[in-house]
Image 1 (cartoon, rainbow, N blue to C red):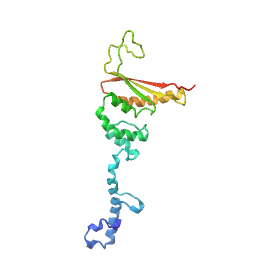
Image 2 (cartoon, one colour):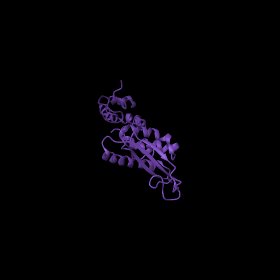
Image 3 (cartoon, helix red, strand yellow):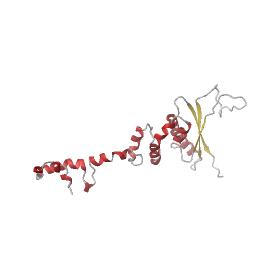
Length: 202
């Protein structure tokens, strides 16, 4: 078995193999390049060999996920669970083929809302219609909004109480808006309507 201190020495002519001074000098470089096995210290060779793992969303260390996300044009997603971060990085590229569509927006929002919430995209926002208009609910006092849509998100009531639910909803709304702003077509505008389902228990 080749000793770590002899890897480089063996590439030199035989006349140098008996030099203890040269063996000691080369051992320093070999520790840096090849590591120290009995101390489980990695060298540059092992680190370079592990580079492909850094671009695997399911193998890369958690601290590398934001870096990997930047290569895929993803914004800050540190507030997501580690599993959702890895799933998003792994699945975002195929979804880019649908970027700017209704389906793409729904699929991306699924990563940025609670697991028990549902999403619906309403593209039927219209202006004032006599007999059908409900100001403040489904009507805007302007002629047309051809590039407008409404995102309706529904989530169950929180067991922590109404005040907690309101605060939690605001935090989730901020996250959802950041996702929508990057996922929607640039020329469109939207309204976000987040509803909390009332608990059926009395």
